[in-house]
Amino acid sequence: MSGGGTGGHIYPAIAIANELKCRYADAEFLFVGAKDKMEMEKVPQAGYTIKGLWISGLQRKLTLKNVMFPIKLISSLVKARNIVKQFQPDVAIGTGGFASGPLLKMAARAKVPYVLQEQNSYAGITNKLLAAKAHKICVAYDGMHRFFPKEKIVKTGNPVRSDLVEISIDQQQAKVSFKFDAKKPVLLVLGGSLGARRINQLVEKELSFFATLGLQLLWQCGKFYWEEYQKYESEDVRVRPFLNQMDYSYAAADFVISRAGAGSVSELCLVGKPTIFIPSPNVAEDHQTKNAKALVNEDAAIMIMEKELDAQFQNHFKNLLGSEVRQNQLSKNIKRLALPKATSHIVDEIEKLLLSKTATH
Ligand SMILES: CC(=O)N[C@H]1[C@@H](OP(=O)(O)OP(=O)(O)OC[C@H]2O[C@@H](n3ccc(=O)[nH]c3=O)[C@H](O)[C@@H]2O)O[C@H](CO)[C@@H](O)[C@@H]1O
Image: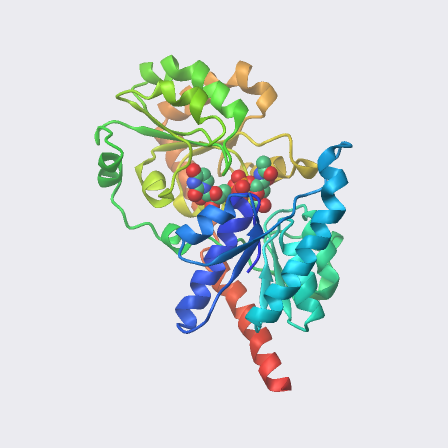
């Protein structure tokens, strides 16, 4: 299994591994990630072993990191080749992020078949490079033949960890677990797996506005911003660098403000809470805006662009809070877009590949 760099690539890989483990209790898994990235912490937390490659992406500017890139690439290819040789996998799976490049390249060389999973409507560079030798490419959006060979594409949706597909926790209990008043509404603020500077600035500015509306705040600010924002912890405000229990966090929420990364969007469809998306304008081809727009077009969420926040946020938010009818409408519509069987569908494709491999041996 290889995917990483951000949660958006890691959690799909974990979801797929969990589903495979359910079907094949004796299956063995090995994750491969990038040495200093968040997968090195999150994958072991999910109960899997991970090995790290010394690899990073190419920077757009001329930097020392780019000078090191060829050396890192060669070192990663050598290490990936050894990993494949020792572990001898039956199949490999890549969910995006640069570490999957060397790993899957070496898997292909050892005749190990691989499946790719692409979360976004705009394909990542690593997956584009790996597409030619992939057996299947599981995607979440239409029109992906712009990037990948048409005959390899299967539209499955994005894998979501099973504990988030059906959240059984009661909302009151979830609120109490964060030491909130169970009778007062909770606003969950998500900045994607790394946190979002602009969303943090917005929340900081609107703290008294939220207080006058009687809201309690569960604010995931991101590990890089934690030092700056932890001072806002109070009776009604919880500030966290990262939320390890997303099931409790979603369950506690009455309203959500979030970035529009592919994984967050897929999870929020399953969770069905009234949501305001603030897409990151800094990602390739502006794909977060496209992710959020797909929901707005179905009247399933509200979207506010970063540049409109100062002028429009309070109005949008007050309108939402003031209308239970609107909240119910958004909840109903966003739930309709959920794809709860995505992980199972992807694992079906992996199974088919394994079976065809066994048949040809
Ligand atoms: C800035 C950037 O490059 N973002 C990209 C990154 O987003 P990012 O890494 O933010 O990923 P997503 O929004 O896709 O998913 C976030 C994942 O992290 C989990 N989570 C998040 C916060 C938290 O406190 N705890 C937690 O567990 C969520 O439950 C979810 O499973 O990958 C996505 C999928 O390829 C892309 O669509 C995004 O554009």
